[in-house]
Length: 445
Image 1 (cartoon, rainbow, N blue to C red):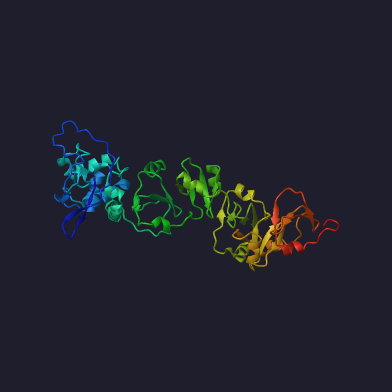
Image 2: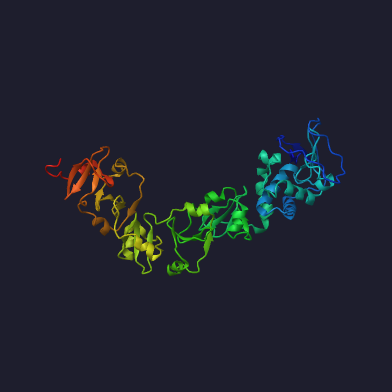
């Protein structure tokens, strides 16, 4: 099926470049009456002719769907037909090897002698043959217009023809959860809290329970304009029915349906997602996430710890006015200690940035010092001013520190530093000026 394109200005069909197709030589079907054409290797002058009815894309789509193509494969089928025949039911292309491509999907006379001319020129039977030859729409490499990409020019028209009855406009930033969308390329995704979760196959769509749902066509590149992560408090599950809550782009798994109910999410819709989408979302709580428990105690997450707010006014003063505070299971809330872990970067309302080392704060002078010390790009969590001020204390005994680029390690002992040659445990990098400001323990330097 070398294919050709309909030239509207001249009323002729233009042959496209031939693509080698590795067919096995077929055997004539029992009862086949038409004379077989010359085998490939003969020489003919290419010639194209038109005939029959010139179908619209919508009419071609109806034949494709009636033949058995599901909608996702029907879009490609219609695009291939439009590229191959221009929609003419009796289109014929005589190839250089004297074989003929016939009808809407240009079924080749030599490689498919079981398709008689009468069948090839009947749009319903031509569609049925294309359905069979293409493996129900899963393999189009026997069509040159698919291989050379010519069919892509017809995808938008084909999609409108197949899905025209379900056309609906969406804002890519606000697609309702659970909506199925399809781009002209054939990719289908479900909106998960506004983010696209693309399916790998029709089997996956059915396995997740979306087999009978309406699929809405969208423009090329639509998925790329959608948010990359689901909205806050979206409930998601995988194929194994593991359910999780989305909090600040991460997921918090529930341990039971009872915990879902106790956390205030009973009756909320849960969006089924492909396993790879579910697994790609980080598990836990992100730095800076705002959370609350069943007693409405609110906190900001800092690493494995949290800082509890004293009031809504403190939430606002800390720069979180208008940010949602997400209800999480009490066990998750309690698993984060009410401390700021070492290694955390925090800031206050005056935008001072500090590193927590040995339970104390090390305030940076500027962004250059943050970068020089090796913390460029690390998340900085805004905490209440009282929590930031509470870190103004000596480092704990046993804290290990170093400065860039020195390999010397110092241990903090009673507010002094002691140079050590052997050590175990994590070593924090601090600015040289800070280390120089810590007195050396007498007799230990």
